[in-house]
Length: 110
Image (cartoon, rainbow, N blue to C red; front, side, top):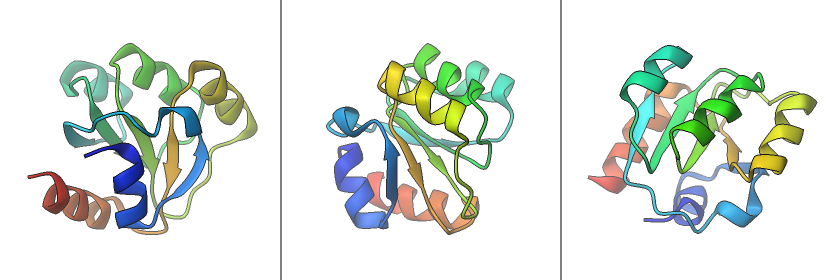
């Protein structure tokens, strides 16, 4: 399943990385700790977090993640958006809580 298909199914808002929406999503990873994501996420994961600072882009790029979903109606700041566009990292936003988004993503991919 691609990031674009997940965006459409979960009704996510695309805030950056339009050109990366065709990436294949292998699974999801939910965490707000950058060190945890670095240690345990896998290439192709879609990362679910409430973090909005620009370091999330660096972690997504380092781990070759399919993208980032920011939950709880939060929006990334301008520095984060700029960095995401430079690095071609998709950032998506949801009004739902991480628990809800994680469950819905799991049901789609399993």
